[in-house]
Length: 158
Image (tube, rainbow, N blue to C red; front, side, top):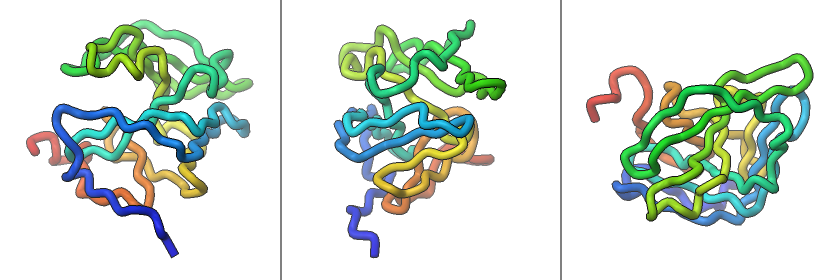
């Protein structure tokens, strides 16, 4: 029986807020655990599943390869991207960070986020994550997160 508190993404705020989490959060790629943390920061925004940001000491930074290009968020600023490379396997543009986010988002500066759709497995407190549809937001859907979610075909106008 799932005793976790149910959360509707429609109750999340806009602009987004940062929510410290003590959940055990894992990321697996190339047959190895590339991230494990009980000190992530969730970014919660209306209509989007949470995005988990990992402190650098809780991920395998040696597996990240910086790439050119960036994107911009009206609240968080410019994101820098990385490929994740494990042995001969690579996930392109799969990880991002904000080096100098806006003042309200300084707590996530230097933390890393992963697109769950590009990983083998992402797990939150033992629950397998379902990736948010689309490739823009990178949200993590667990059984306690309720939609509908923005990101899929036909949802950009919401």
